[in-house]
Length: 143
Image 1: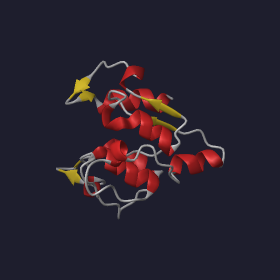
Image 2 (image 1 turned 90 degrees about the vertical axis):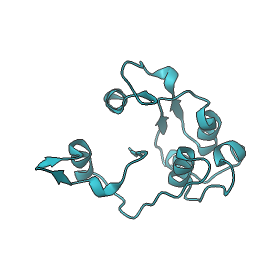
Image 3 (image 1 turned 180 degrees about the vertical axis):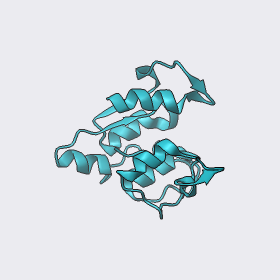
Image 4 (image 1 turned 120 degrees about the horizontal axis):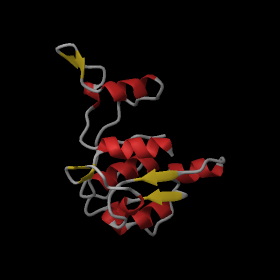
């Protein structure tokens, strides 16, 4: 499982303020995980979609515009395709509308077997722009 967080800095892991952990759940998850400490935010106009592209393809985003819109028709040697090639089932989950950042087309180009979007979630707890992290994770971890 890959957990990619937006607007998060790794320095807060294992940190405490007045004796209280800042990220207790992530700390628990990190203990049994690979944590990449030299992974840096290198995005352009595509924001979140550029970060996904970096993670799945190991290529920098487009200088102008968004890879997810401009290059969704390309063929990629992407992590989901490689995992599929050795017998894994790959799924990607994002509780936003399916067309946001052209994810439906791009996730297909990256080789994901399944994409779950806003239409696959019970949007029961809104926080900021959409489904709360807590509600999202509680449902998806069961799957």
